[in-house]
Image (cartoon, rainbow, N blue to C red; front, side):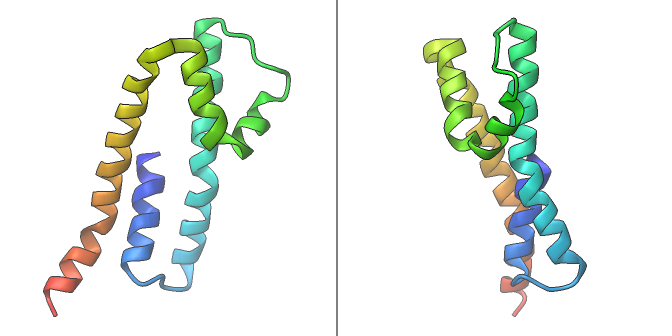
Length: 108
């Protein structure tokens, strides 16, 4: 997830260049919800929490809604801890993704 967010941030920082960078940005866009879905499936299996048969594709397409619901249903109020770690991961990756912008904007 860190790399997906960082790649998308770098792509935006560099004014959305064309070529191979578009492919990497598109791939990162597809891999991010996939990594969330895989994490939810692995966590559910580890905790013995039953999920529907095709939960993986449902989580992939509805991960912004389903992942927090899953967290609160399995952890209760402790889900805020996991969401806090995810927020820190997201902010750190966004900062790494913004480094090219910070370097190029100060050199002009």
